[in-house]
Length: 464
Image (cartoon, rainbow, N blue to C red):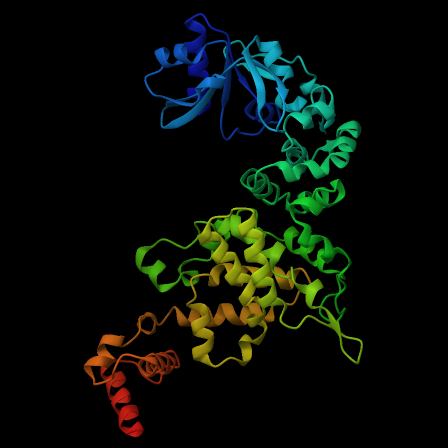
């Protein structure tokens, strides 16, 4: 991508335009990191960009923003512009084409306002961004009040960049974040969600949580987490103290790339359908895991009670928590499939402690759940964030490995159509028979379709 981004700048300059890399790619480049994408700023107008490049997408043509598709990648080319008269905390009422310096000073933070010419290897820094990079500071360009007033999402972006880069937030900028925290409620749920997903991406998820709390933004974007700060737990199982401390410790142990963690375990971690297709169910695993951690004990403050012996109990918190998690994720406009996945993990997380006492069929039904890889990883983190004992986790992993060595157990021996052919009528009794038959199969008392038919006939005869 770097080579292609350089070639795009070269082509613009050869046509007589100014063109620079700008924003996060320059910041990452100066920090010695490989940029994930490249944005380009130029005095070329959208029509001129369209004339220069064969494949373009007019994503924001009225604001001078075009996407150029080259080498299978997308590169944003934005015309130098100045903005004014923000009224809704997001969009400017006035936009005009400008020069490079004016374009730099209308941006959010100094570390994102550096321009770089990859042809001459020359930096253009009109905002002091290079100095703040060296000092590891997040600072607004110009007045913090003005920058946050222009786009309230910058309140969240400030703490996200501080967490992501492991930087401090400059004092006046930090004060303005705290003072204006309430304004984040005026930002759309989708934009807040996208920032929070980035904020809780490992390895900086813990710092993200702490900054969210200290800034005052937590009370406005995830208010349900605030009561966990003072919600104490019984020290026998939770020597770490409060539910909030428990969540922090779990976030510290998040795999850096959760999807890679799932793949690393090999075929024994896959469901039967995944084994057949060769594709593990990890599409949203990386993004879902931090949210299962954040939300798995979200109902503990609401369900807390004390026994006669002084022990603290949270009866039913997993069920109440599943409902709360669904409400939170729906409010933040998470995709339905991902919401269902996270909610299922929250609802089931207390089952894992009973695994050693489960009947073989019950345990195997749990292993067969589509969300089981996510649930199992949540259980591991739950243990590491409290008593640190992984004996149940290890037991389940052993049982899982043993189960996947017997693939003949995975598909059901008979279907509803098979039972109808044997004389059963559709209805609740047929469903109950299928369930009982599946238990017998998973317990390995029935191994073939013929054995299953004979067993069903025997059950039907006994009922007669």
